[in-house]
Amino acid sequence: MRDLAPFLKCRNDGRPRLMGIVNVTPDSFHANSRVSSIEDAVQRAILMWEDGADWVDIGGESTRPGSKPVDVNEEMERVVPVIKALREAKPFGLISVDTRRVEVASAALEAGADMINDVSGLRNKEMFDLVIHSVSPVCIMHMQGEPGNMQNNPHYEDVVSEVSQNLLGTADRLIREGHPPELIILDPGIGFGKNLKQNLELLSNSSNLGSLGRFPILWGVSRKSLFDDLLNREKSENRLSGTLGVAAYAYRKGIDILRVHDVAEHNDLLKVITQLEALENE
Image (cartoon, one colour):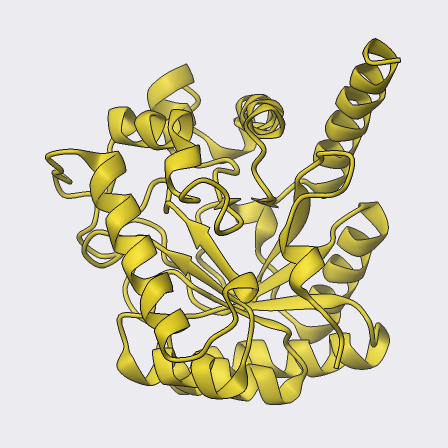
């Protein structure tokens, strides 16, 4: 069995690993990320790998603010054939499945997915058990509420402390049940039940989420609405520059994985930073 733990941590040169987003959906918030067929999804994912992605993340349900749940069978029909086709096309490509449904996650693992990326943070006991029994790498994301209501006045007494306690509590429960700690990633869930101030507090205090390096950290900030709040960029297609700014900051903060729509641009940015830092340290 392939050792996936090294691919959950940042590269040896300090660059975050890149996870390319492939949305097999008609309604994801960034229209340019949507694909409508197996062929399109496979082509998009392979291009992302060629552009420098370590992972591709395949999702069949939009969890944008205000979205409604998709029927589980429809989600499975969107996701599983893509993963099967990708596994055939690129046997050693790293694939994660973006789902909160245990049925979809289980079928995706059988089809060849390497990791479960659960935006609901393993709230479902059956999903928690699947992670244990499959010994799968897992990304645990924090979300307050549900996608349909999560942005309705999100409230925290101390957002960094509360998100950290939630994520670390779930991670420690997995470990107590025997799950390898090196296969656990934490994601603060930027934009999932947080306002602008809360999002910025989480980004600027990211080291607390990893509990002094115990777990790798993933950020999913790409083209999100915080750039509308921060930069007055209403349309997602105008948010790349802000997203790249966060990526540069992520490098400085030691973030392990960036989940992004624009792999080539992020790869270029991070290569330039690492080259300049290498020269500076000579």
